[in-house]
Length: 157
Image (tube, rainbow, N blue to C red):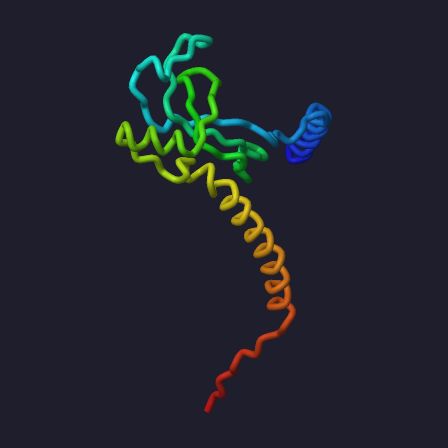
């Protein structure tokens, strides 16, 4: 029975290896994300004729990730964006400050979520630390097994 189970496991491993030989590690080097930050009033100043919608304040950034773990964010800035559309319009820092003061908006310096800021870095750090601990822990365990330990013997009187 054990021989059949071992043979079946080996066969499944070979089939899986052959089918995933062309599989690649998923990554994205310039994925772009737009986060809505604040709503602006629906006025003609913020209406886009091309997209037939009103724009609001958003934060746009690009991200590098591997296996869906965010590693690095770059090219971050505030913009005007249309909800539910992948469209944004660049604004200057002066225009942004004018909108914030006129419409009494509190704009954070970096509205990116905590997961996107440090999530992937933390997981990779834990994996690297675990690998180092496993490697060094194995060496110290074998050293302890090799060194004989003296056991005190009680003398009978």
